Amino acid sequence: MFLKINQITPELLFQAEWHFPISYKNTVTSIEWLIWRYLVSKYLETEKDLIWLLPEVDKSWIPIQINGNHWNISHKKDLVFIGVDSWGIGVDIEVFKERDRAFLNIFTDPEYEMLWWKNWNNFYILWTFKESVIKYYKVTLDDMNKIHLIKVLQNAMNIDDIYFNIQATLEYKGVQCYVISWRCEDLIYSVCTCN
Image 1 (cartoon, helix red, strand yellow):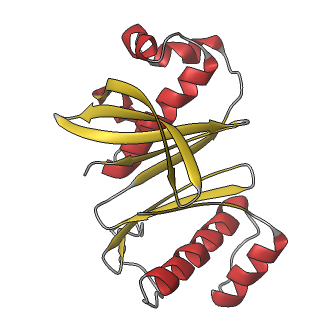
Image 2 (tube, helix red, strand yellow):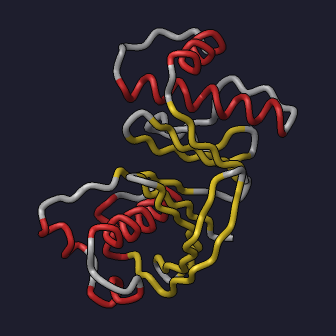
């Protein structure tokens, strides 16, 4: 597994444009897409001794695998969070902010109780848990209510210098998924694997 959270800087954008000289509109999504291509290609070159040009895509032009590795991306603010794993991966990063209180009711009281109480911090933990599962399975947000929180543990770990302190088991269509998560300042991020 490879994880990377990078701030989008002018220097990083310059490196990405130099490696992937493509024409794009100056939109945040296009810039983030260019950055993740660059970061994933550097990982594959450095760690796997592979040269990556274009990924295999599905009918909607979404890359599925890169040289046998599954990838996933999430971006918020000026950050790009990428994950690469040979078995499959889903990642999500969210900016912590209070919203309309009605959003708190998206999740069930028993799910909040597993995280001790109903508040915005736990809302975003649950959201990133479930969205990382959604991204792992490549389904839609409409499937969020089909994902159930089974167990939560406090467990500190470090993967590629990214820290996590929550480990959870979720279930989607009878299959258990494993998610790790962390809140760092105003960001909450989660990673899902099912192996």
